[in-house]
Image (cartoon, rainbow, N blue to C red; front, top):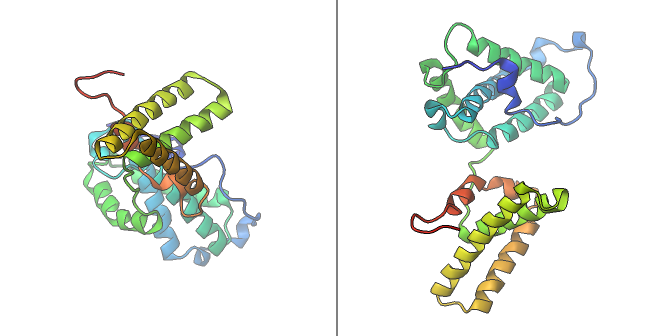
Length: 235
């Protein structure tokens, strides 16, 4: 399997900007300021970068691990922020440490997640991922209806009715119709079903501004699965 370049792999996890940190002279950074716990956390970020890259490429072995596109990025931010604050490194120095770890992992052996060494490291790192960034919640149909409706509103407000906005509107409409049908089948009137959907929308909008992760704590990919067309129907 193709081995991604260190920077390319890391870019899957690095957000557009890390939290700002004060400049620190290189000679002021000593090895004892980076604790073994820091090193272990940063090395796991390197492992996640490689596996996230392979997941983006559709590698079956990588896809056997939990999705890292969202949680891996949040892990990178939280761990990097902690090391910046506790060890006095700049964000660039933290990034360089992780890039070096990615390069080390790629030397000699394949970076294929099926490689025994990398798989072993993933096994050791996953508990740290779960501790730092709890697993994503699987939203139900009603929550997905609200999530995709909010996504459409955000895209439409930013870009207008672009193809991406239209696609999101279609997905949100599909889920809204399915949830409405499910609520009516469960004994709600049409008005009650509409009210429940509106209340879910408002609750999700409020949750989007919570400090506990907001909408990002949900497995939004599950919503796309719920929006897939039925085997015997089209939309």
